[in-house]
Image (cartoon, rainbow, N blue to C red):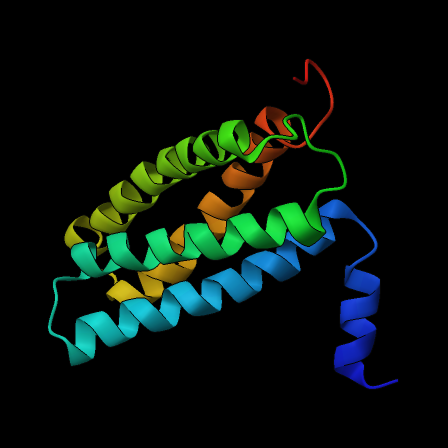
Length: 140
């Protein structure tokens, strides 16, 4: 078994591990889109971040419902997806605010700031999504 297969196999054994792997893929999409929009398209980093995080939300949703979380509070996508987006919007506001603080106030390069901010928002989003969406307590 190759090293990558071992990491994926062992990483897929718990929800947090699966969320970490899914988050890594989502981050890759988010980070590359941020880089492309900012560097190649010349869009301000905050606008680029808004777009890249939004695309990441969509990628994350389908991975979370399909693979990461074993329990779902709502089994209807018409309820679940808007709540998922709402939890992501809370994370997005935190993401944008922290990006601004790190880049504008702390004067960290926007790509370095993205890595730092993603780590913070990652843990916040896992806890929020797990509690609000992906457990069976008070389900509909």
